[in-house]
Length: 427
Image 1 (cartoon, rainbow, N blue to C red):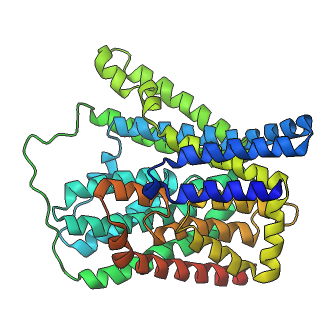
Image 2: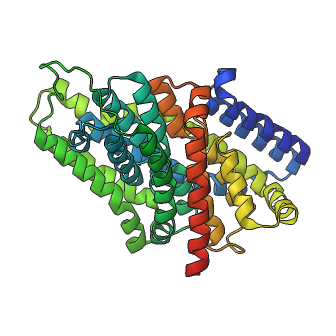
C-alpha cells in the first residue's frame, strides 16, 4: 500500500509541476491525486471508522486555510472593483528607470505583505503598462516585481499562502515571523535592486501616450479611498484578532468580510441596480480564483494521507541522517520550490516535522517560511506571482532564466545568510 501511495503522489506532483506542457490544470491533478490517495488508503487500512476520523481531522485543517483565502481574495476583489489600488499607483511618478525600479520594488514589497504576493503582482504589473511604453522594460520590471512580491509575502502571516499555512497550522506566530524575517526579506529584495540599478544607470522612463479621455472609472474618490483603507484595515487587523480572541484567522477574515459587505451595501444602497451589481461583494465572490482554492484543497488532502501513514516522518528522518544540517535541508526545499509549487512542499514539510519536536517559531519554521516564499522567484514557474506575471506580460521561461534568475538566486542566498547570522546573534 505504501508503495502505491508514494507512486500516486509522485505522479500527481509531476502533473502539477508540468501543468503548462501537459495542458492539464494543476487543480485537476491535485483533486485526482487526493481522491486516489484516500481511496487506496481506505481500501488498504481496513478500518473505515479510523480513516473517516482522520479524514475529518484533515478536512478541518484544510477548511481553515480555504476559508481564509476565500475571504482575503474577496476583499481584494472588492477593493479592485472600486479602483482602490489607484490610491497607491497614482502617486508613483519619476523620470529615471532606476528610481522607478526602487519605488516599484518597495511599494510591491510592503503591499504584498498586507495583501498577498499574487494580487500585488497583478496590480503592479498592470500598473507598469500605464507607466512604461517599451515592452523590454516592462518585462524586466515584471521580473523584479515577482522577486519583490515573494520577498514581501514571506515575512507576513497574510502575505504568502505558504506563510499563511504555517501561521494557521501553529508553526509560526504573527509577531515573531515579522520580527524574524523582515530584514532577510528586505535583503532578498535590495540585492537584486542594487545590481539592476547599477546596470540601468540613468536610462529615462519612456511613458506610453495617454489620451485626454483616459479616466479611472465611474467610482468617486470617496468610494476608492473608503474601500481601499477599509479593506486594508480588515486584512491588517486579522493577526490582532487572532491574538486577542485566540480564534482561528479564518474567523477574523470572515468577520471583516461581513463588515466590508455591510459598508458596501450601505454606500451603494441608493444607486441604480446596474452600477450597484458591479461593485457589490456578491459580484466580487464570482471573480475570485476558485481554481486556486480547489488546488489547495486537493494538495492539502493529498499530503494529509502521507502524514497519516507516517511516510513524511520517515522522509524527515532520512534527510536528517543523510544531510544532517537543518539549514541546508530547508535551503534545498527552497531551491526545489523554484521548480515545483511551494504549497505542496510546505504542506509536506508541516507533516514531516511534528510540533512536539519543533515548537512554534522554531528556526526550522521561520527559515522554511523564508526559503519556500522567496525560492519560488528563481524560476518564473516557481510561484503564483511568477505564473501571473508570465500570463500578463507573456514572459518567456528562457528569457526569465537568462535575465532574472541569477538576480533572484543572489537575493535568495544573501537573505538566507542574513537570517542564519541574525538567528545565531539573537538566540
